[in-house]
Amino acid sequence: MREESDYGLKGMTLLIYDDIFLQHDTGYGHPESAKRIENTITHLRQSNLWKQLRVEKPRAASVEEIGLVHPQAYIEAIKKISDTGGGYLDADTVVSAASYQAALYAAGAPLTAIDLIMKGEEKNAFCLVRPPGHHATPARGMGFCLFNNIAIAAKYLQSQYRLEKVFVIDWDVHHGNGTQDAFYPDPTVFYCSLHRYPFYPGSGRKEDTGQEKGKGFTVNVPLPADTLSKSYLELFADVMDQSTAHFVPEFILISAGFDAYKHDPIGGLNLEIEDFRTLTEIVVKSAEKHCHGRVVSCLEGGYHLSALPLCIETHLKALLRK
Image (cartoon, rainbow, N blue to C red; front, top):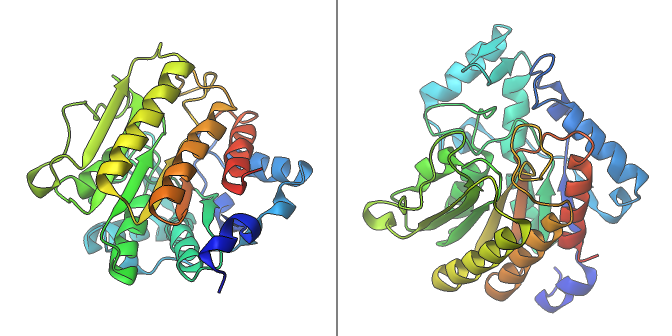
């Protein structure tokens, strides 16, 4: 096992990926298409970054692990729709014949990363997955999401490794209503989101800070569409510093949506590609300070087919400290 002091010198960033994610078929013209991942892999290979990563295949999450967040009836409903050829959960959220299996592996990807990191093999990871997850509430899939990958990962850290403080930072342009719902009364998972507002899915007001014992363990930073990149980065740094200093996490999870990029076709704030490096560096710095650098990031949104691979590249370079 590698010593903690060796991490910065020897540690590699994990890239968790499997071709099964390409089989989740959302149909012609859908923004959350397999092309997002295909383009990213092509770019990472051509840029030679692929060889600098430790690429690992995920395992499928078990039904019991999915059940840490989602009720059995909901899991069975998704499987039934998939087994009978597919259908729609809402106007935007597609279940194809292969979607249930792809979703099991998408949820299993961060669990695979967590196991390797908790064994001390590596320090951080990026999960190149689809379908995404942060809009999936415990009982309802929506916003392109079937199972909430990040919420399942947080619960897994608690059930498998007995961690008491898991921090989730969500920089997708859309508020992660599903993740918030999963932990709203829970003081052991701190959920922090910066997002465009008012915007889909309509949640994420500044006043929404948790309930009961979880009061104060949800932080929402709603932003108007004209927010400048500089202002966004300053707010992000402040909220990360203050929240992690208050909470002192044992592990950090990132809902890494790249649709706050200024030219994203269905999101869009005003972030430049290189701004995602800055966001990642801020998170990594907090993780180094509070939790031995332990970070697992999962792909959420990001729909600009040529810019998404570049955004992910900058994210990975910051995880690698390149």
